[in-house]
Length: 321
Image 1 (spheres, rainbow, N blue to C red):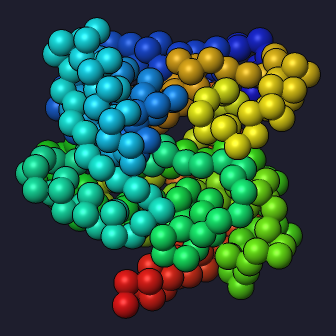
Image 2: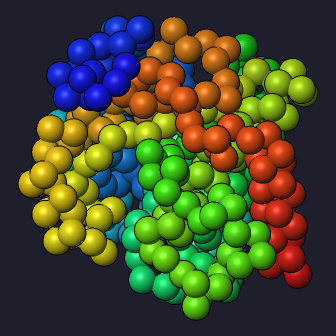
């Protein structure tokens, strides 16, 4: 796997590559006994992930902030697939209160939970604070998913134990995790305004996604839980995620068009890591173009991962008192 593979779309060791689509990587997979939560599953690659997993028979719960858009997304999928099993629940990842409410709402449905795809995110936004007073990209992209995953973990463990089916958690990260602040995670300046960089703050949050996946994977292995946790880079795709830097991205695309993917290709790695049988037992890895890929030095630092876990736990606890 290298630059030539990215441009050519040639498959890697998995048999898939940058040109593979979500439908191709999940072809012939029966997901009819799986229940999946997809955050941000109403637009962009999240919607394509919803559509394809529903096509494979999974019961998909779209977790979205904009309920109107989420219900429209559901109707769009059902219009082309009458058998699609889709529910919609409200979730604002920048609010711990909303995350807790979502968790209660989901558990009230009395459904199993096999797969959690932490897909939602924001990118390159101007400095702002979440409802809980945390820098918005860190709050939404990392802390919200960290808290959501913790709240749903017992349900996933119960489901895996009762069914014997391996549970899977997929964190959407980005190759942008390499472009972060000097020490990787600015524990002492998470919400500092004066030194804020929209690009580095995004990179920091994407680094946090990988560190979270790695540390959770380590903990679950230690417990002997039948759940894997991996992180993925979906590729560079022009979606609504880039609304804060639309023109910059359009100009960038002129010079780097060979590296860009369409939405079906962008959703491929998420779907591959979520349901492909070839990844049974694979955990704590980073995937790009449906193949394992080396992450940055910061991303593979186990001490940094533990420190982030403790920091995130303490932050969530402090914000709820």
